[in-house]
Length: 77
Image (cartoon, rainbow, N blue to C red; front, side, top):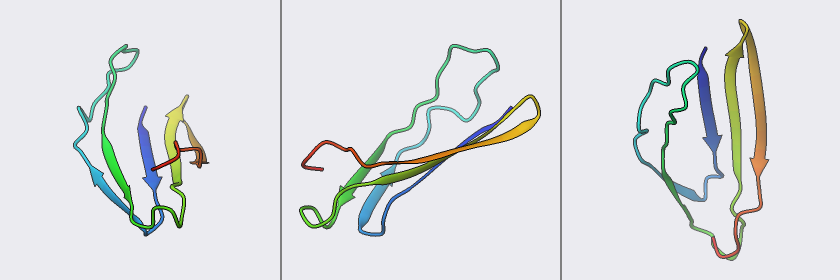
């Protein structure tokens, strides 16, 4: 099984991505992998922050793809 998480921002967003806590998650594990990111809206007050995401994974040997967009970030970001 694999899991790939993609995300993207508009070009006016500056992104700083910290390293992931791991790159391997054992099957049937209660462990987690974390990764922090910092975004800066260079057009704050003019354009709102939005993030697009896509998650690709495999279940029972079938490829799956989920995607969406997050628009409801707290005001002031």
